[in-house]
Length: 185
Image (tube, rainbow, N blue to C red; front, side, top):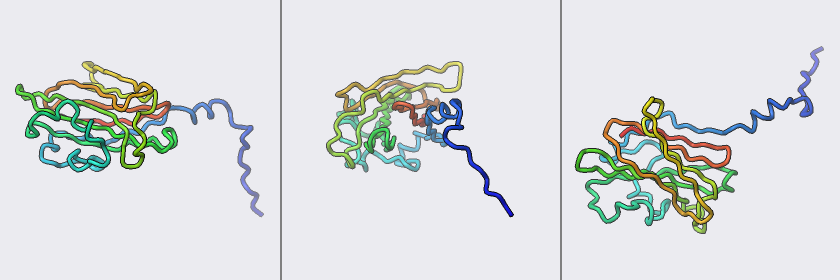
């Protein structure tokens, strides 16, 4: 006769295991998003051209500072980020705005805004939401910038200029959850 396997009770779980359950939840996209494809309107899975995402992203932010410029030198994409229960179901969008400069460098504006499709009444980002951009990640030349949402921020953003062929990493975090996207200019 086979005996049932006894499972440990909750009381038998040690503090180290509980600590591991509370550690940072991290979601990293493995694929490198090649932004040069965006000029040809080719977007990786999960990304949309902001030209096609009018309901998802408020048009006040999708082009940011570049709205008044000719569109030939610009490209922009958006991706929904879902932090699930941490944000009570509120979805936010990560926007990457590209502008080709005269010296063939790219001016990059990275923005985080609320998604307006699901939560039309959510005009502010969650207090404490962070946006971090790291240029040349995983190298000795790595540089980072970070901004944190305040109570009445409806957009947080970071801007930089970089040469083609360079990589950068974007992290959006809230409490113990981090979503990471990697890009190639």
